[in-house]
Image (cartoon, rainbow, N blue to C red; front, top):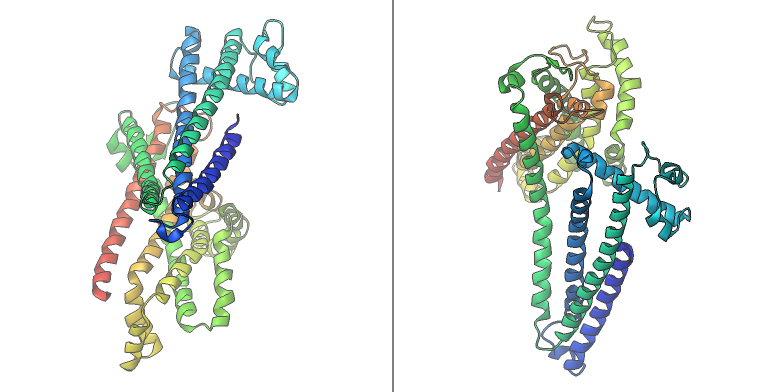
Length: 486
C-alpha cells in the first residue's frame, strides 16, 4: 500500500472514530448534551486523535528508519572493492538506488514483468538500454554486483512497505478502539484534547529552535574542520581572496566582508529613508482612498523574484549609473558595481521597511496623538517627537530585517556587483560579497575535504555571527525605548 493510500485510510479511520466516539458519548448521556462533562465534539476529536497520533507517529518513524536499515544491510553485502571508503560507499549506493528505481519504472511501464525484474541478468541483458527505453538514464554499464544489490534493495523495500502498512493499520485500529471506548459522559474529553493541542503547539514552536541548533551545529563542525587545515589568523586578517583548488590558496575574508558591508550600507541608505517616509505618509497623512491603492502597489515589489531584480540591475541600472555618473566623473567604466547592487537591493527592501513601519505606526495608541495635539503640537511635531519614538522598537526590527536580507542577497549581487574581491572605497567599482563566494565555493566539482570548499562554512558562520550581533543590538534598542514609552 502506498503512503498516499495509507494516509487516506488513516483519515477515514479518524473520521469514523470521531463519529463513533461522539455518538457513544451522547448515548451514555441519554442523548442530552448537558449531562456530558465536555461538548460532544470534544469526544469526537479525542477519538480521532487516538487514531491519528499513533498511526502517524508509526508511519513517520518507519519512513525514517527503513531507508537507513535497508541501505545498511545492502551496503554490507557489497564487495569490498566497491566500498573502499565512505565516498565510494555513497557513490555505489546511489547507483544501486538508481537501478532499483529504474527497474520499478520499467515494471510500471510494462517493459519488464514483476518476476522478470527480479531474475534479469546483466550478462545476458543490456540493463542500461532497457532502462533508457523507459526514460531512466544511467551513466555507466550496470555491474552484476550493483544489479544484485538493486534487486535485493527492491525486495527489502517491498517487504518494508508491506510491514509498514500492517503496523500503521494496526496502530490506527487499536487507536480507534481505544478512542471510541473512552466516549463516556464522565470522561474529561476537553482536558485530554487540550493537552494534545498544547503538545502540538509546543512541538511546532520547537521546530524553529531545533532547526537553528542543527544549522549552527553543522556550521560549527565544518568550520572547525576548516580551521584545522587553514590558519585562523590568515582567514580573518588576510587582505587577499584567491582560492585555488590546486594549492597555495589565500582565503582572507576581509575583502568579502568589506563588499558585503558596503553593499548593505548602500542598500540601507536607499531603503530606510524611502520606506520610513512612505510609512509615515501612509499612516499619518494619506487619505483612506489613497492608502487603499498605494500600499498594495508598494507591497507588489516584495513578490517580484530577486532574479528579476538582478536582470534589472544588469541591463538597466548598471548601464545608467555607468553612463551618467561613473564614466563622466572618471570613477569607472563598468556597469557592475557596489552602487548598482546596493541601489537595486535597496529598492527591493522598501516594502519591508514601509509595510512593517506602517503597521507599527498605526499601532501607536491614539491617546498619544491626542495628548500631543492637546498641548498645541502640530502634526509634524507629533510625528517627530511622539509617534516615531514610540514606534522606534518596531522600526528598528524592520530595519534589521532589511539589513539581514541585504546581507544575505546573492542573485542581485552576482548580476549587479560583479565577482571581484577587492578593497575599494569607490562605489562604482565591481566587488563581491560573502554569500556569492559561499555559492561559488560549493558549486561545481568540489572536494569537501579541501579548505577551498570548507571555507564556505567558515564564511557562513561569520555571517551568522554578524546577524546575531545585529539582533542583540536591536534587542537592546527595543528594550531601552519600550521601557520609556510603555
